[in-house]
Image 1 (tube, helix red, strand yellow):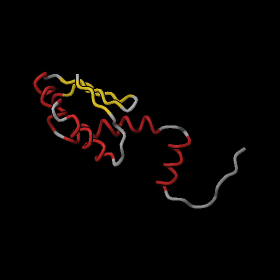
Image 2 (cartoon, one colour):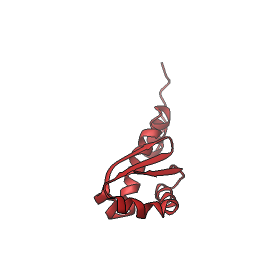
Image 3 (cartoon, helix red, strand yellow):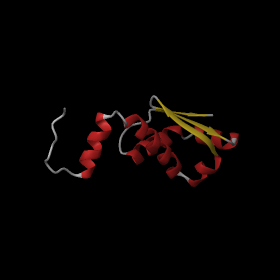
Image 4 (cartoon, rainbow, N blue to C red):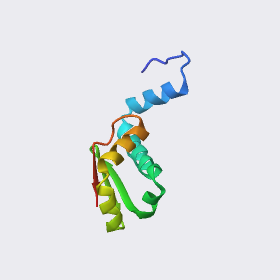
Length: 97
């Protein structure tokens, strides 16, 4: 049986330990990347049909080919803006479909 720790700790520290112990960081990254994508521009919410984050790659399906082509010119800037929003480098590549 594990020894109980009776020392007081902050909630953020406790949650960080819980996430690390239970290996939940990948799932949390998926949610954070999705939120960061939609926070960049309100038009993204209009034209995005689905979004998936897998193995440091963000896959985004768009309903407008014109919008997809326009975004493809600024992939590097979008990539840096998403990572800046997250506060660390999570996304390495963006695939627009």
